[in-house]
Length: 329
Ligand code: NCD
Image 1 (tube, rainbow, N blue to C red):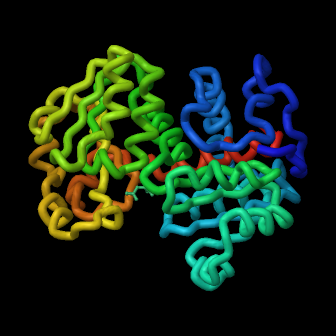
Image 2 (image 1 turned 45 degrees about the horizontal axis):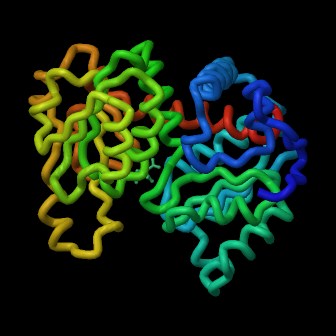
Image 3 (image 1 turned 90 degrees about the vertical axis):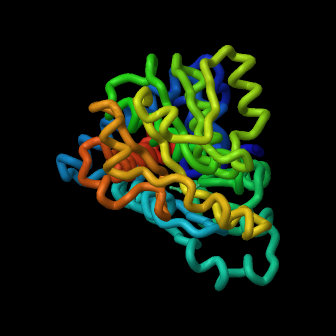
């Protein structure tokens, strides 16, 4: 990333300094940037944001700052929660989300040109793009912080941070847990980012998917090299009694080139009240959402269903991150 000229100063030497200084002026491209110290900082700052929102007190922390939300792929939660986060901190938003087809992007403008234009108006850019590495490309051209809101099948770091926060809030710890991820482990970027973050904790990992949607080999090899207790299976029955966290994901239809293959796997998993009777009393069911049939609606009233609380945590995490990268951490 080139020299930053945002509203707020960029830390000149982030190494060895406070978490605030390490995040100020920085991009958020991958979960690899977050060690335990930064994670704990994001959690505690998210907690403060929650308290502030619950007290219904208005914040002016980011007054005068402008966020551009540039989404080349559909989004409901991620874009809305970034917008809510910015506005709750007193900042404002240029939303280029559902409207990308009306912008110059649809005229064939390149990502670097779009980024170099939008940074003239803003202090931070949140980008969702269908290609792996797009956020990094944007960050290389931008002189303001870029936050990756999903780059194809690559990463979705802010989702993984809110997922981790949700586990911590729901179960009071992350160490010592068995986390089972179910569904599309191949294309699901939230699974990739969460898997990487969980490597920093003492967890057992269980992956449930059909063969064609297994976790990418590079990630599986990383886990094995680190000596993580990891197992793969095809069947939720193999994990339901032992899991502390059941992280369910959607089969990513839009990533399939062969729709016959999608049809073969699309209805393989459905969490039902009946399956839930076999789970631990304090297990939590999570889902990055949207769901398209993987969790039956009648599970929603089960206190273990945490997916809407998870959504809310996303706003607090994004408030914490926006404040931090804008030098107000
Ligand atoms: C996820 C995504 O976009 O990767 N959604 C989200 O951001 N909450 C998961 C998905 O689309 O299945």
